[in-house]
Length: 296
Image: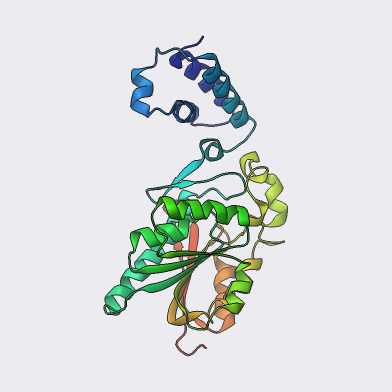
């Protein structure tokens, strides 16, 4: 039988071929398998693993080496300081997307100051996946009532579990629908804010992505059509109707998509204050726009 220490040494060596965070990933996987925290892992590093635990750990490491995302192996991912369940069939939340949530929360805070007598503010999250965006908004803004929309039953099943885990059943509603069908059928002027991290990777680019993404993550959440801009063209001409006058649209974009996405919004003739916000790495990351008060 091998000790915790020797198992970690072996795993780190094997994982170093596929990740720059081999030590951390090996420790995360063994903690998950044993049900230990990191402190116990270090304090008990001479403990012997039984045969079953050793075999399970070796199998988990092998799956990671073959390209399965760490978050799927662990069954959860951190986002906005919260813990979300994730599993195959659901897009893994990325730190990049936190900027979108921060922009949404900033707008909602401004609304609270402008309309202090309002009971709540209605938000729609289009393409919710695990619910990371919708639930983060609801968690950090208690005045928000969020409708989270996704076409995938798999994703919504995970989102439903996350709703329950975070205790947000009363303020987050899940709807299984195509986001554009939802927009077409939504009541006019019914939302204060619409947020979306739509699929925006060009179809032909997907095959060049890391194996973790191209093989394991859902193509439905990745493929933005031939040029990656298909969803933005439709959002630019459809998202204004369900928004109240002065309501805001907040969208994540690819690093090279700011110019065309902004132009789609300007060409639609119903948006104002169209702007792009860069992330901490200096990449274009979020485009926001306000529904013109003249638009219907």
